[in-house]
Image 1 (tube, rainbow, N blue to C red):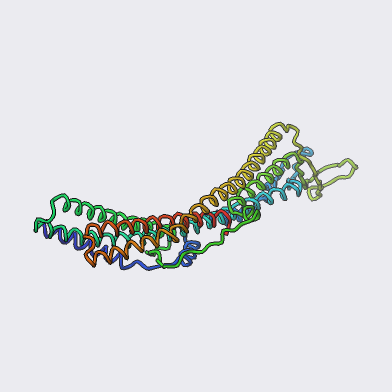
Image 2 (cartoon, one colour):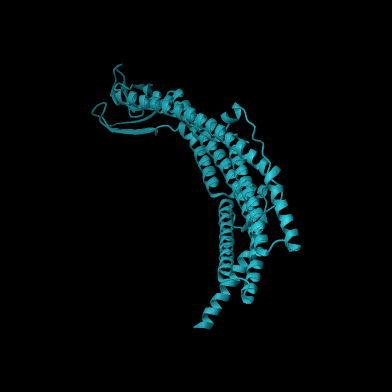
Length: 408
């Protein structure tokens, strides 16, 4: 049984190695380009636009042409024949309003595509930012882990010599175990981000975000037009225009329907003009008719409901603009406060952490402090650097959110 288990373990390891080796690094610009071409949701939205475009000309669909034939004694006791063709039409305004509504359907779909694209860019930027943060955090923890490894090694030596007790050794082991667990969790979180990234890209590749030392730059200044042109606002605006157009379509149900017809028959025997006609003689009739909506209660109810939908879409449009403006104001409050904290760390806390590291290194080398004190001081410096990374991550998340909200 054990050799079989060993073979399985080896096979799994080889597959894992193959998977990892197949990964390729990708930068944000490349990721956005791939996602815009392959993202599953975006593909669906694009197909829906094409579907709606194909429906535009259905506004000009006419009722079937009626063709009928008559055979029998419908004019006299003689056998006569006749045939007729008729076609009903709505007024041109009806078809125009229907086509207009269909075009607004297309524009609404296009607005949804733009909204999906903006949301996709936002998710990709957040994924790259999160992966970069996790990588920086991992580097800090690995440095801290190396310190605790050395501390644990020295503790074991001290314990063997009787210079320390079991409590010091147990504490060192637990700190090392905690760091190992944190590193393992960070590794899984990086895998999680990578899986999510590849799902967004959806091109069958296996990518890992490229980690660079350069900070992302964004232009987050905005004016009122940037909010008006935001995809989320444009979606509600197009839905409002569509609702208004559908109201006009409902109103066209009050217009008359026109019918044109042509009928050709034979009359055998003596006609009203006292002339005798045979089977070869034919007579033509042109018909014109109107279909009037005499019972309009249902039609007017449909118009009323369409107007109510207009009001709903108007409220949604105004609410969406107000929501975006409120979110922008809220994010700017967070942005200014977080930026102030980041600058405070850069001006004071990080230099302090650097000083703590430098002085503790010197004092430990000179024998002025023991290893435990050295580890504790270094851990304090690492904690400051870790807090700074958290602040920078939060700041960049706020910037990405503002970048999205201000439609850049």
